[in-house]
Image (cartoon, rainbow, N blue to C red; front, side):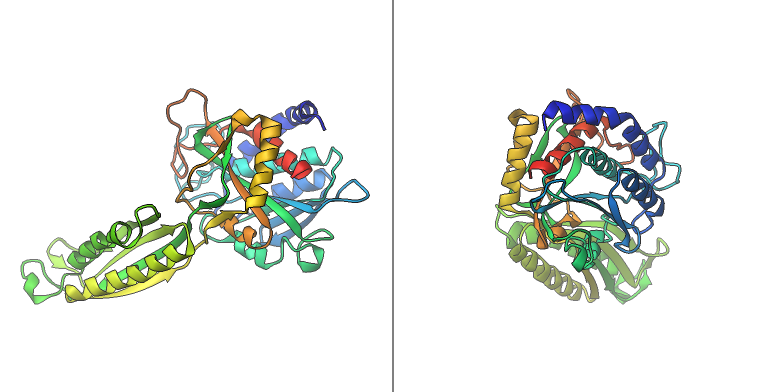
Length: 400
């Protein structure tokens, strides 16, 4: 199909797709609560003639399926979007701002969902050399919806719990990227995003009067030293060319200004880019926390939550993505990233079941110095990125 024909079809659908994106933005839903969003997705997939399977991923995940239109179809291609919002109070001031206080689409999943619905509409209207599976998953924001759906066999074909005659060969996913200029896309082979391990540490000492600290063991002082010491994991335990992040996001302790509390609790996250570094970071985290706590006469309990694995782009799928993107969009619009980013993505789980490639779609307006970034209260997915997002998803389904 000529690129001009594909773009003409996208432009004809764009007004109604913009309305869908704004409707989704106006009605955000948290992880595992995406009931209305799921209903919108199912309605749109039915309207374009796709077969659907719902109730996945904890209840709100949806698969859509369009068979090939050729007698000898190629391998099945999957395209994925996430649907959940975040517990953030919106401050965009947009006319379609969230109507749910304290919940907003601050990560652009409304845009991702709209792009995939747009791709389904367009692909339903053209000749398809291979089957296409559309994966709409819940709970990317910490709920691991992708892992649940993979466990249910979403990529395994009808016989394995999904849709279609055969398992998925390749899967592609995108994320709107606020630091990349609109009109551009970017990716890289290998590690694309980090693993995401989370922790809670409860430091227990002995409560005492603030005027008489020598009668107790100060849990706050111990926690402060532990938090500072944890930074040496990056500076002294991991090679300077490797990557590890250990960030504390919350500290809670105490009831009054003159009481040294018995306990102090802090939570945070550890990010790495390869399994060996991940193992080192976890081992040293436990050693530093436990030994530092004892040095202050305290003890520490660690609750460690193993989060998403590293999102690794398959070399062959990424090379295919590069070729398709450069042909469809122009080489000047396609970037090959030099390094990974320390954010995390549960798209990582799909790569364990099919050759996978995850890529970034530019959102920053041209000539803008800055643009609100992900998880900020003034972030909004840039509507100008929708046509390119839809076009590249369609091209990957047709050529990838």
